Amino acid sequence: MTVSDSEREAMRRALALAASDGVPLGPNPRVGCVLLGPDGSTIAEGFHRGAGHSHAEVDALARAGFAARGATAVVTLEPCNHVGRTGPCARALIDAGVRRVVLAQRDTNPVAVGGVETLRAAGVEVETGLLADEARALNHVWTFAVEHGRPFVTWKFATTLDGRSAAADGTSRWVSSAAARLDTHRLRALCDTMLVGTNTVEVDDPHLTVRDAHGVPIPRQPLRVVMGERDLDPARRVFDEIAETVHLRTRDPEAALKDLFARDRQHVFLEGGPTLAAAFLAAGLVDEVVAYVAPMLLGAGRSALGDLGISTISDALHLPVTDVTVLEPSSDGEDVNVRLTMSRAAAEGI
Image (cartoon, rainbow, N blue to C red; front, side, top):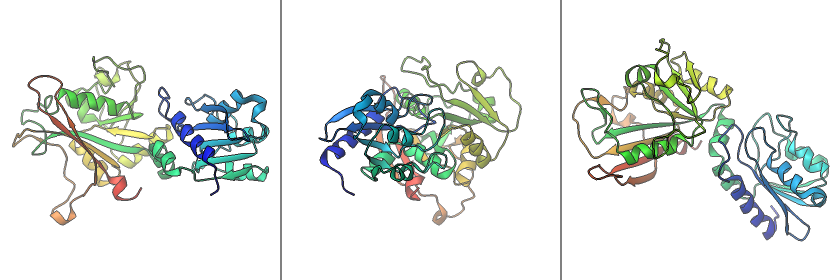
């Protein structure tokens, strides 16, 4: 790969643009673009602001106008090659007279592939792979969903030191601290779907909304999904007007994820009980685990995870720990909680 220092710096800038605050999650990837003149100076910048808005390349071209002719486009993802809500970016770059394109990540979306080939066929010089790892990290959930044909699944649970998610009488509210619960809302906001089972809705009546530090629901809410075959009381809080809710009448995790992928959902935050979690784990459909561990012992009560059919220690499921964070108490008298993040995807190289 032959790239200049100015192109490398422009790619770093394009990645920063792609990560701009305020860009809504999914279903489109985050993309940034910088247009450089023949002398390596920046002509214009652009980034994608969400579904229905101009793609990053078109955004930058609109700002550049006639100055785009003969320019180099530095873009974090291969320009798309299809007509969706907007036209193909590869054709827009060609029509604008761009002479060279430097991109980071190749697009594996079967709907959008072919941008590089279209550009080269039109005589545009193309270099690929500049800071590709950084680009994949920026869109790791989107990339996973596209390449695997299903959403990325994060299972979150709170537990005591002895693996209990609730006491024998069913109480569970204080297994995690206020700081841990606030952190959970932060993680919920990074997903586009929250999933629980019908039993959780029946017994716990969760709201499944993302709330700020004052308990107020944020403007953009993930899709709330209830999975299971039983009928539910429509007065349950999960069916209120604060966010959209879908009831998937299936017990099959694979079928549920297939349905959600067809709805353009890419990141599922699994917050169901031990039975639902065990079903997803047994099916090999949990990619990340986030556990909030409280320094307390119950000795009895509901387990955080149902039976996986593992009878010997040699068959235990091992998950590499990718992060350990101590969550300090937000008020006097609360326990310190520890958040452990583990990645099955990392263990299996996916």
